[in-house]
Image 1 (cartoon, rainbow, N blue to C red):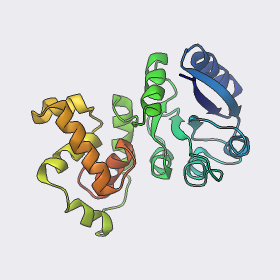
Image 2: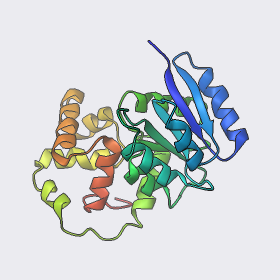
Image 3: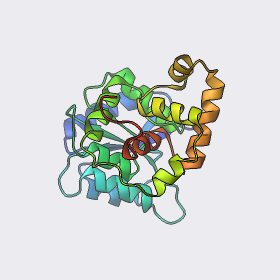
Length: 226
């Protein structure tokens, strides 16, 4: 199998160098490019194919939120958009939730252990989203606490389509739990949980687990600290 193509975006050259060394030490990954801000990243990715972009949130010229939105929703003609993992230095970053809404497949703290970072990248490359680590659960809950109160609308109508069991699974997904953890909590087989998650993605028209979690918070099904 060919190595996964990773593109690095961070305004600190030393940080990019560290990520490059870590990623290129993996047999199944390679760094295909890097940029110091969102605008430069978009220009490079218009001519460079990448499977995943590791994106800093706070940068000059164009921040990681807008860069993520353009990468995911405005890819070059005929090309699949890369998946995006956003990075933050702080435990609570006002841009993180916006980046998830913009289409990022997850977010990580920059001080994550090397094995956590590489594991998260592989998870995203497999098509899942990074929401399980305790740090991301804490970030999601704290940022979600700043959201406005839920307003009735299409999302609430979709929520009504869910079975009681699907709601239970959605709540656990929003809390950052893996399929195995959900299975243990709800006394289900892990394969059954996987089936429920697939149905949730289809019914709610969401791309991955991160977007399911966002939906749960936005509709008030889950609230910060609960």
